[in-house]
Image (cartoon, rainbow, N blue to C red):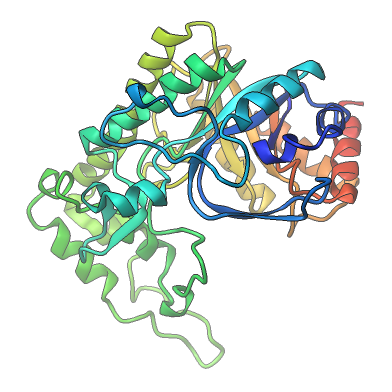
Length: 386
């Protein structure tokens, strides 16, 4: 099964959208039911070309009795029942509709509830990142999933950010690259020390993390090459003897949330398949949460494939190794820049991912891509299956 990702505003108000998506050669559409803020191109919409989405929103009617402390916001840039309108239009075109559900990535709720957000070892808050170590956050995510399944009645449920968000975030006018932090530093800055997390770690963890981040940048040669050995090359080296315990605590944050959501989803809609955006790296944080031991309760595991195809394929193969018999493996394929609008190149990448274990392609993003890119994508899917 191939799945095209779209936003509700790509469909609502554009009568041509459902047939255009059906013509791509996909069987299903991942329709955002809960999504973070963004600024989106709308190259096909008859009423606009750029849409500003200033805060995260819930695209189903908000029933006050369904929520507790954390209540999602309704959109003002599209109708409050945009998911339902888009769902019905897509299903009328013969497409399955899966509810694309973003969980802990929510700057609106984080800004309003700073006691519930991820904080790094220096105490700096990440307002976009709800920390799943807090019961209020777990409760919100459960209610979100239950409401989407009850009111949205999707053909499938896709869970994104099903764990803690980390340091990496595309925020407005991001100004962090000049610090020259390494990938190890980013992993360390993703460890949460909020009030619900700090006491879970061994006593010296915070000091160890702060010291590792504050090491002087690795020296370079006259040609600019980094001198190895000056800094830890992995987060395991940075944490030393604390590694195993800290890693287990981090993995449990994602696992606990995941298990609770699968349980509530199965209770609410037993026959709706569940897809997880997942990463086999135990230190992963963000949209693709850590899943180092697999998850037999899910129907499909999807890995991010936005980078170097060889690296992406290795990640897919690892996820495949963690899967259970009959569990589907998906490749989350980027069809936007820097990927070329070239059907042959895209088809080669699809082939690479299929060889690594992908049994379905999740295509990002059918609402943002230009007509040339959609044509290349459609042709790539045809070439791959021919």
